[in-house]
Amino acid sequence: MASDTTDFDTDQMQQLEQQLTLIADSKQMATQTLSLQLVIRALFFEDGLISTFTALHHFDDKQQVAYSTPIYLSDAGVRMLTTVSLAEDEASELTAVKQATRDFLTKIETGQIGA
View (cartoon, rainbow, N blue to C red):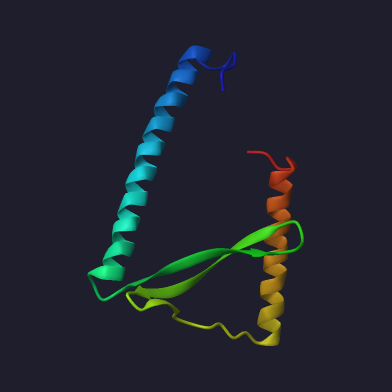
């Protein structure tokens, strides 16, 4: 941010921001292209791909949480690799961690915690 304590003026800061945005966009496009190549190879040319699949699940009526699971992707489709079975105390602990994480994210989203 431009301020009295930095040697950059607002124009210089905006130019730097634009340059960084261009770099980030080009890297994101490269990552997306490479990812798409892996998926296409798994579906059509190779023996498949072990990867993670991330999906949004409703945490409550207003919020969603992303969960990931390992999958096997091939020309036969998508197959989950594992099913997690938790003991009662493990399930309770996981629920508590999810709630704490969601509470923390809510504080960030509502501006209660800043960078």
